[in-house]
Amino acid sequence: MECTVRWLGQDAGMSFIAETGSGHSTMMDGAPEAGGRNLAPRPMEMLLAGTGGCTAFDVVMILKKGRHQVSACDVTLSAERAETDPKVFTRIHFHYRVKGKNLKREIVERAIGLSKEKYCSASIMMAQTAAITHDLEIIDEA
Image (cartoon, rainbow, N blue to C red; front, side, top):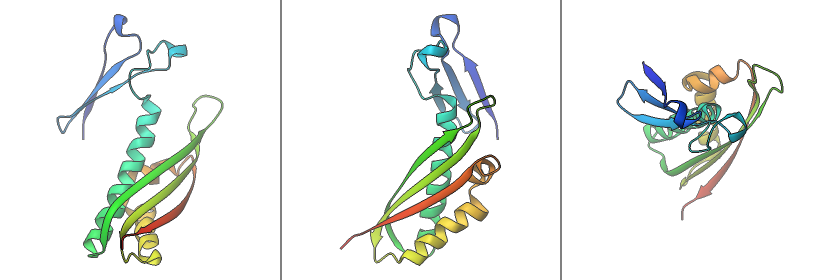
């Protein structure tokens, strides 16, 4: 896996573009108090978003492979960071909202557990510095 991150230069403040090995680009920017212009997510927000995407991907894939009728999966992450440098994540709470037809709580909890313990590289790395918690909301489609 590869990625190139390039500063957009003096006139751009603290804006960067990341170009991934899969051929995609995304912007990042800093907070105004750090010289940024608030034009894009912060790098740490990107880490948090990537972690949410990783676990949501796992949960949907596991449920689909089990032939469960899942139609939506949202993960809201709330994180706290250390007050001193390096300001690593110290707590991350994952709130899963999974929507589908006849989804059983224990099946969805199993999918979340497999993501947390085996498949989601991002959350497993984050757990090295952060206490990870989660809760679950299931929305039944009639």
